[in-house]
Image (cartoon, rainbow, N blue to C red):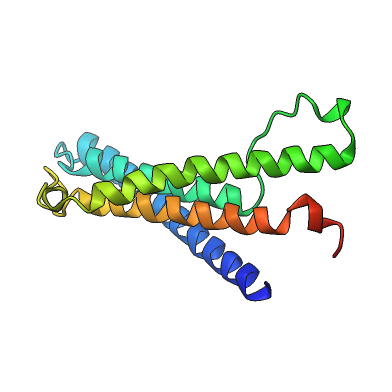
Amino acid sequence: MGALFRLDRLFARLELGVAVAALASLVVLLIAQVFFRYVLMAPLFFAEEAALLLLIVASFAGLSLLVAERKLVAVDMVGAFVTPRLQRWIRWAAGIAVLLTAGVLAGYAVNYLTVPWIWLERSATVPMPRAVLYLLVTIELVLLCFHQAVQSIADFPATAGKR
């Protein structure tokens, strides 16, 4: 189990690096776009699409990181009305719901990437196949599933109190 938790932390650190790099690149790109557009009067033709790609990558990496750090927003409407033991079961069931939802989305994403013509579609301004972005999103969804699965194993109420 210790190796699983260490791998989970390693992936979380990697995702933090991806999210920070994507956001920093986005800031630099947008500042450059403003400079080129209003100072040099020659806007960067690829800036809008590249900014969108960076924002999507940062968002999905950040979402997966939020799951790994246990910082997802949750609204607890029944917590005050049930016992602590039942609260643990409800929290675990909510985690399983997140895992199943992310798993279904990841499954659809993987199926989408296996269609050959997806890899032929090119971006209009950024010289790469659009499937590269879809691949990054799919990787983040799979990592989100991994983080949630590790948490669900660790938080299983029947064994959580025995450590």
